[in-house]
Image (cartoon, rainbow, N blue to C red; front, side):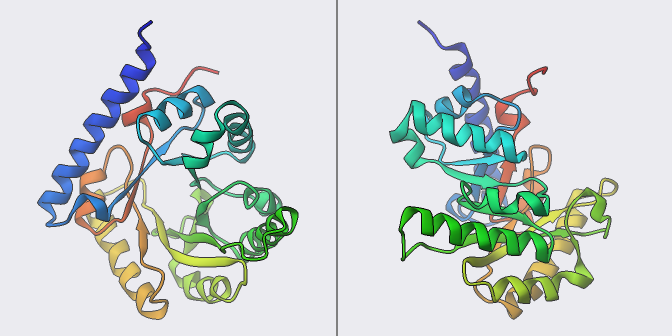
Length: 245
């Protein structure tokens, strides 16, 4: 029997990858410099299974409880596919849920406060203890930068970024991997990403290992890659409209 949903996802992936290829070529970059995280917010775990079978390895989630349920459901239904998936937390994290996020996430893009960082650090340590893994790798995290300092939409203001970075860099169970940008709602994407790229360059000088720059979504992939994004987070362009719930 034909799986029409699989066909839809395959078409969305193909179109998005063509856009990535073209954007990288235009920027003089190679496609392997840019990770594609497919954001599956509100979509069922069956879609994650389809994506895995289509070769997707990085899946992004915005909501803590939804993500934890999907991780558990995927492990129960398809353990081999579950082992191949890397779960990325890309949404806002409340400090009282950070410990839980560290129990399932393979990377966190949205650290915006000391409290969230500390919760992730504790959660990663707890996970290692529960699994008896004394050599567990630290959890890679990116700091979420609010370019316009409107932190109500998520992120840390740029004036507070150095202090947060220094704090995260000192935590035993986290690795400071880079920056994720939250651009303003108004204005040109290219200008915002160019601004963020300058912040990222300064950030790397202070923290040379923090080379990742997570920027760009369905509508602005090209502008983000031109500015040096190393990771685009794409939902609607691949998944289609969110299901009505």
